Image 1 (spheres, rainbow, N blue to C red):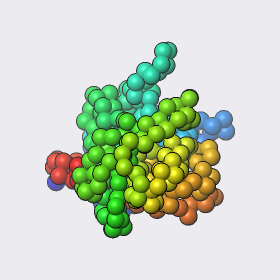
Image 2 (spheres, rainbow, N blue to C red):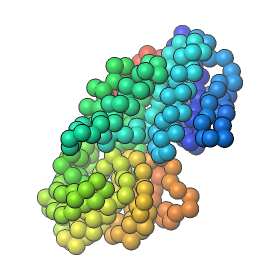
Image 3 (cartoon, one colour):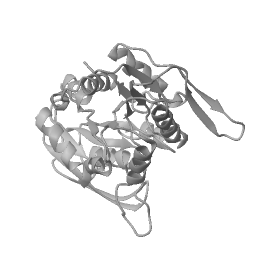
Length: 313
C-alpha cells in the first residue's frame, strides 16, 4: 500500500462524479471551500491538513473555463500546503481538440493546458479518452489514459444486436472503431466528412456496408451533435435498421439536444464525465458511470501497481 495517507478533493462543478468515485474507492471527500469575490474572482482553500499526503483532485474541465482555473489553483494550494504528491483526475480533459496547428496563427490549446498543469505543480494526470492519444506527449509527468470501453463494450454486448456494425464518424476515429470491432465481432463503417467551418459539417459519405445493419457510431465527444446526427440520418437513408451512438464525453452545446431528439438516432450512450443538462429532454440518452474505472485506477496508482490489465484494449 502507498506509504502516504491518501486524500480526495474536488472542484465545485465535478462534485457529482467525485462523490461516486470516492465512494467506490471506499473513502470520503476532503473538506475544502471556495471563497468568492464580488467581481467573480475566487480562492479555493483546504479545510484540513494535507501535509505529506498523496492528494487526488478530481475535475472535469468542461465549460466554463473557471473549472480549469479552479483545478490549477487547487493544485498550487496543495503544493504550497506540502502535499507529498498531487494527482489531477480529469475525466474530461478540455481543450483536447486543439492538439495541433490546423491553420496559421492559432494556439495549441492542449499543449498550453498541459504546461499550465505542470506549472501549477501537478505530479501526475489521470484522464479518459483523449481526443488524440499523442496529447500524452504534451506532459512532462506521467499520464494515465483510461478508456470508456470498459463500460461501453459490456453494455453494447448486453443489447444482443444482430447484424451490428461499428461506425467511425470521421477518419480520425477509425482506430478507435476498429478496436471495438474486434471485441464486438462486427464490421466497420467509416464516415468521411468535409467541414465548412468548426462545428459545421458540409458533405458526408459512408464507406462500408450500411444496408440492413444495426449501426453503432463511436466517438470521443459530442459537441453540437451536427456530425453524429448527420451521419445517423445519412445511414438510415442508406437502409440501416437502426443507428445509435456511443460517445464518451457529452459536451452537448448549443442546439445539440434538439438536434439529437429530431434525428434518427434511436439511442445515445454516454458516460458521466460531463453531466447532462437537467432542463433538457434526455429520453434518448443512456448514461453509464465511469466511477468504477477511475476508483480502480486510483487504487492501482496509489499502490504503485500497473494499470494496463484494466484495459479491454
